[in-house]
Length: 64
Image 1 (cartoon, helix red, strand yellow):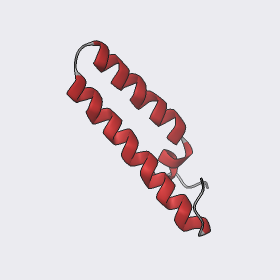
Image 2 (cartoon, one colour):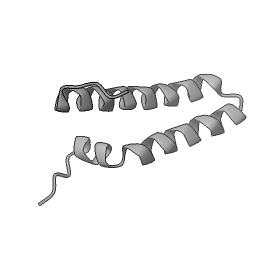
Image 3 (cartoon, helix red, strand yellow):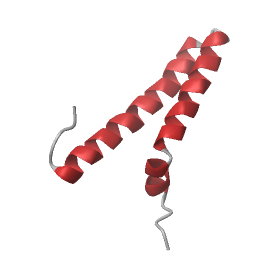
Image 4 (cartoon, rainbow, N blue to C red):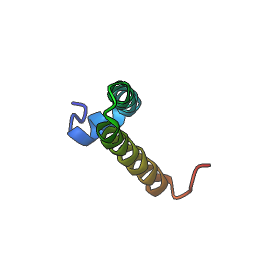
């Protein structure tokens, strides 16, 4: 049975999640809700950074 933990699913669909978060941020910006947009971009940034750190730890080298 494949791993269906939150972490595993988030990693599997990370690109889709980041895209959806950016769409949400863009929509909020168009409504002049800049602070709300920044909040969703912050979530996306944290997810992307965590993924990068996990990759670095997994193979012992940094990708550029």
